Amino acid sequence: MKKILIKNAVAIVATNTKLNAVDSLKLREGSFDISNNSMIIADNKIEKIGKNLICEDADEVIDAKGMVVYPGLVCTHHHLMQCFARNIPASQNMELFEWLRIIFEVLSKVDPAFMYYSMMVSGGELLKYGCTTLFDHQYSYPREQCIELADEQFRGADELGIRYIIGRGVITRSTAEGGTAPATIVEDLDHALKTIPQVVEKYNDKKPFAMHGAVVAPCSPFTVNEDTMIETVKLARALGARLHTHLCETLDEEKFCLEKYGMRPLAWMQKTGCIGSDTWYAHGIHFNDEELKILAETKTGIAHCPISNMKLSSGVCRVPEMIKLGVPLSLAVDGSGSNDGSDMLEELRTSFLVHRLTSSYDAPTGAQLLNMATIGGAHILGIDSYTGSLEEGKAADLFMLKVDDLDNVGAYDDPVAMLATVGYKRPAALTMVNGEIVVRNGKLTRIDEEKMSAKATEFYKTVRYTR
Image 1 (cartoon, rainbow, N blue to C red):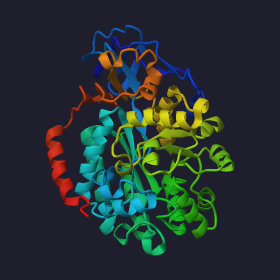
Image 2: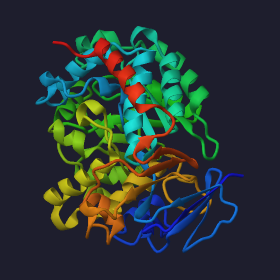
Image 3: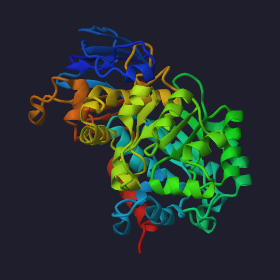
Image 4: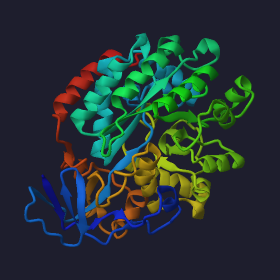
């Protein structure tokens, strides 16, 4: 058994409540315990958290003097493939529907190499900024590809050492049918129903401490038709997989649903069955008061993506009201094309600031946002029994930040809130996933970053948007 001792930390940000993830989110403060300074890890699990712990048979001792140890961040919505569609001049000042038309042109070039390099670029960045678990919504399957794309994403994830859950997405509504997707990435429903089980059965590992998972993820109300939503929902539940889709991201989407389906987006979700405790939506901005109550009653989750929502002028998610009602909440970066990065630390601070601006005293606290970004995300993904918080017996998924240098003087008296109120603008000193150190001194440990950067850059040149 391999043992690691972490000692002398400024604080270990451990959980301080046995409440469930949704109820603990309601605590504006006090959901974390920062009284300890050391931790013993045995293989992939946290064996002990305490003060001045000693482990004489430790294989490695990590001196965390001047550092805070945090639970690994959990990203519940991403589009890794968009890393090759970011910062395109033509799309920089657009809103969602027109922006997608440009992004989809790049995504029509998806192939296995595309998916591998996008994982190495964006997955690597996530790890460097403290994210240990990633859910990625993959929805582009040109040329009837499927399992080969998933295989390459998981190959990249395993090389990096990130805990990875794929969203096997579906797009069946083209621009000819009033949607936003070009025919090049539209999939036949029969092909989707035939190949989704291949991904789920191969990668949806339900064992404790699993590093792989799979979710069924029809893309959005404006990229699939009603048959697709109904049939993929049925298939997901038959396979025992969770469900994910975009919902209530923009007012254009609301208008689309009223025109095409004769009802608001959430009502259409209810009609098609895509709602419930096994389901979460990306964005969730434009719900009315009654719909917020339905989300809480059905325990349907939300992935909050503030940077993307601001860049695309989509709006601000009603997080303060959702917290009060008990809606399951998590934090996410969304795709690199609408975020232009994969930094969950930046997402934490941005979320704090946008809600302070729009909700003042009712805005979520730094502790509540850290809760969303950790155990909240793990709960929504269905893996909170073994990750999402620093607790004895859970996976050693964590990251460490150096806080005793000049630019952080006076900033870390409250290390729980610090990530949201002050922010942290450098890579982690160390990131650990399932007991393995995958980032050390701000650098990925399992790959040569410089060589990978050169390879990914050469690949990017073959798929970049050139108009």
